[in-house]
Image 1 (cartoon, one colour):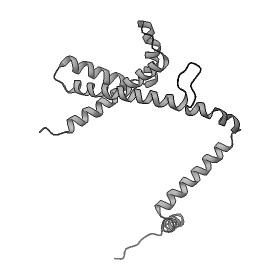
Image 2 (spheres, rainbow, N blue to C red; image 1 turned 135 degrees about the vertical axis):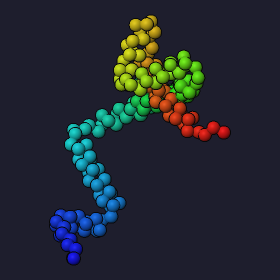
Image 3 (cartoon, one colour; image 1 turned 180 degrees about the vertical axis):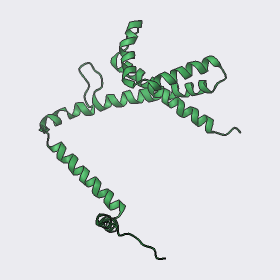
Length: 172
């Protein structure tokens, strides 16, 4: 008995040749180059006023304070992010410990908190905090409401990460 091997279609033969001539990394770089050229073409198709961009750049970077004396642009984003990260790490660690505790009350509160904030969209949480807290007589500013919402949301996700890490450590 002889073994019969069907011929490959020409496009598969060409693809094999292309793969032999250009390695994976070369094809990857060529793909990136094509994507970069397409993005640059898309970006340059806009009617951008470079003078306006350069005029507003110090505000975007955060070199100037707003008229009310507060940070702007990238500096404000970094400030909100760092504040949210610090609070969410603390909140996440406390929640993880509560979910691992033998106390039914602590476990219930922590489980509800983590489930609620992981199960609702962040935009809804921001709206609940910014528009809902004033209904209770607590009126946070826009920045404070953003920090609170981000901290509560990220804290719920971090609690699961911390809990899994604590469980993953062998008793000893």
